[in-house]
Image 1 (cartoon, rainbow, N blue to C red):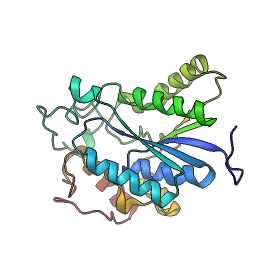
Image 2 (spheres, rainbow, N blue to C red; image 1 turned 180 degrees about the vertical axis):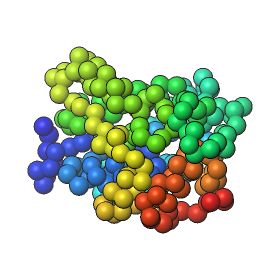
Image 3 (cartoon, helix red, strand yellow; image 1 turned 90 degrees about the vertical axis):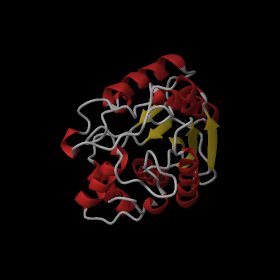
Image 4 (tube, rainbow, N blue to C red; image 1 turned 60 degrees about the vertical axis):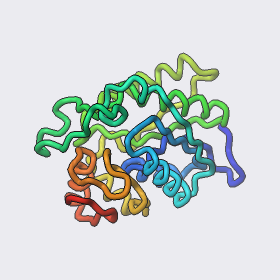
Length: 231
């Protein structure tokens, strides 16, 4: 395992700049020298997410932030996040969120992100790749399930030089309110994070991601430091 000057092991982090991602960044930086990847893939809030990722990386002390652009998702469409012809819907009743895969799902997106992260981990000599995926009380994306990451780790074992790299999902079984509480404990930079699917200057407050975030802070008894058009 490659270690940096202070003797801490290296880890690669997929950093979106969102709420869960920011907590995962703070958690990873506690024990590792972090090398983060951020992806611009044609999403509606691409510029705002990049800014958030840069700020989160700066605050938690990421060693290097690698910004990658992927044109595939914008070109193939099929998701409200990347296809201008599909509107980002307002969230339905909170109790129904996660019952079906929503139109904001980007087809097999996380596989592309993880493949790049594992490639960089091989070069860096890092044995851990962290991602802030969440299954509990979330949107129900199929690439945020524990079984998905178990399968991906098997792929890594079969397809890398020494098979020792592991994707780690420390938040996957936590409820979002628990993630907020953990973030408060860690001092995660929620004030620079961004979760909204449609707004870049002010969070809309009505898309599914905003609704889940607002509920998480409310249930955690914490104040969300970003502003919303509707809250």
